[in-house]
Length: 252
Image (cartoon, rainbow, N blue to C red; front, side, top):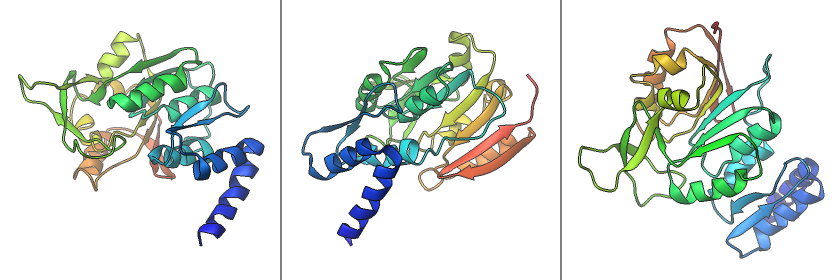
């Protein structure tokens, strides 16, 4: 079975990336190094991936399968990547829309350090080692023993030591002088529940496209929170991979 799966992937990777795809697949199966470096003419600079980790699955979803490839009738100028992880969605967006401004937020430190390596060759990318919340506050990790790609957070009580900085989307827009958001990508491991519970009217009313992965299995109420917030707007909705895509029909 493993041999058949390898041959299947060999065909897919080679078809998608030619010889570079073959090299990447062989590195996954033979390299004992901590990092795999993937380089292809399709992207401006090499991509750093942690070997034998969730980075490979994320790469397959974002880069290989192009889960964020959405047909739009406009050229996005402002993209915000909430839950950027190691920056693969940011890299994808910058290569697809090279003239866009991309703002990437990642709460987990080791993810953020790799993100910085993956985006360093791109212009007009701003990164924050912060969580995203419905206000500027401090957060605490709920599942501290979990893998670094699946940390869940909650708002920290006052005087909590070692809290993680979190920022609101309203504040992101204010600091970066943004009048609207063309694409807002959200993959924040359950924090979308709180994000859409309150203080969302300002930024959501100025968002053109929302791409979101919901995590009701991790935090009950994520979908309910989103649906209530969306009930005030006119939009088109469809699914792409693990994501829900909402295209708003509103004037700016």
